[in-house]
Length: 80
Image (cartoon, rainbow, N blue to C red; front, top):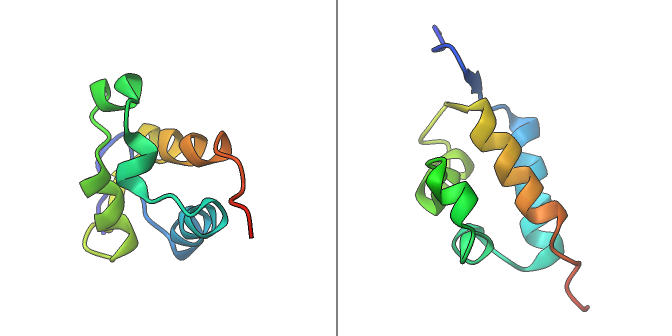
């Protein structure tokens, strides 16, 4: 598979990292992006993240993946 410059393959590891943050926080992509103008201005949308998670998109912008992971790192763990 040929990957465009600035893009990376969406590996199982990336999907697992994002899904583990969703499970840890109880917050999905749409809620995580709510009010996040910086990320939205850079083109990251909940639809892009959902497409990574469901396997529809096999590549993504490296900057989008980094932004997505940073979103959830800042969110506290949900109460059990």
